[in-house]
Length: 269
Length: 266
Image 1 (cartoon, each protein chain N blue to C red):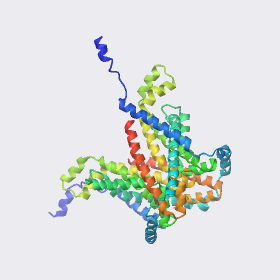
Image 2: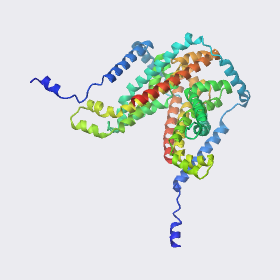
Image 3: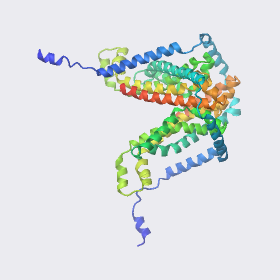
Image 4: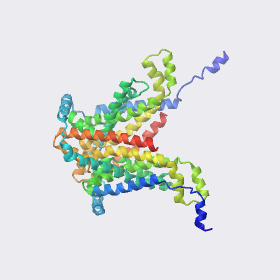
């Protein structure tokens, strides 16, 4: 009797009351946000009636692809897109590496420098690559240079943040050993940190390269070079068979990139 | 005994790695080659810096007129609505799609077709998808919402399928041994294991949908992108700066909020 009474209040609950309140609040907030958006968002019903028809029309116009367009305008643009993505990634890594050493709290012990590096990373990630491209086209004019810069500036935050976190996770043991042996700071970097963070470095670089191939395909819409320029021209001329060809090519390139990156990743990491 | 002989007797602590040296040299050669192919020259860069100074001069100070701010507020609110709705429906739909793509739950024909669908969704940039939706459903927020639903589906279902494949099979077997049907197994054995990660993915996707909803407007998909692009084309760079500041501020706030939400659901 007393035993049962003592045990009775010890009913197992998964969450504490505060947790439960926090969760319920979030559910209510989510529901409210969805309802508010549903009510407020501007949807023109007239456009919706012929949507299936328009979609069918879109695909009918896209097929068959206009293959003759490929050697004319797509091939060179495709190569350019590849170079933009790759050069942009390389440039981003070159710019982000020193910053990520500044951001890593175990390498740089100055909180002001840590904060400055973090702030650069957040600003770089907050501005979309297309918006970076708008800015660089206004400064450097249309062309691949703007594309490379916008890919690079968008990627600095991504590469720097992830690589900085990898640096912070590095084991202090080898670094202390090198310091004790009297190694200069540059050698501590090359022989203490680098071997520990190399796998993380390559995986971040490959991941970002993969993303950048996709991103560089649209930069041309605002004039920053690559296959997007051909896509923009085809769209403006309403040559949907050319649009279809370009989309097919982008799809193929993205699949090939993914296969290549996953092969490299399983080889070297 | 000379000093050179003495040194040769000792093994090198850090032998040279020629494969990696060749790879680094190859990368450097590629960089120079690609730079020349793309016609990126120092002269262009310097001219650009000159333009950049003019550009920045026209950007400052940011335009804070009341009518511009009104326009920006309308666009920004629409962007937020696009992000909310796209996340909600995208995540809702990726629950079944992710389960269908998990090879430990779904039969292999279903898993592979779901994976193919996810690959198609993932390979196109949201802006390209929204171009297609603008043609299909017309200009406006709906095209943007549909485009971001597609990209949310691609990302969330791929990672959700991976989470489901990594879960502990013992609990599934235990529930199955009691004679439970498929739905019971899902609710009692699968969801309790994967829900926390799923919420994490949802929050991450909401973050990225906010970022992307600011640019679907450039191709007619609604939101702040349209006023941004118009201001840009009219050389109203001071308005562009105002919009950029607001976008960055909102994304930073969203990142803080999503960090909090993730902690609640951990």
